[in-house]
Length: 70
Image 1: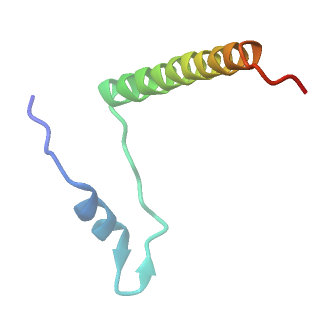
Image 2: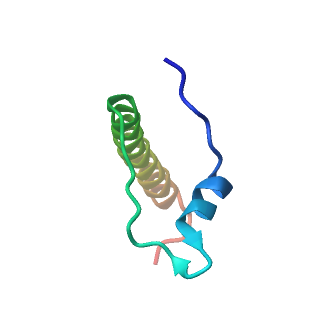
């Protein structure tokens, strides 16, 4: 099973013709593409959550060790 690789430029070129933007464009997702997109979405949420709590912990520790009290 070989899949044809396309770049974003050829994809965007196929969406626009001489009359303007085509509105009758169909995008087909295979099972593998859907799984990859789902994994990316879940991974993004996990990484964002870890980054948020890490930054929050760093800021709290900087506030607690600050010599200047307001």
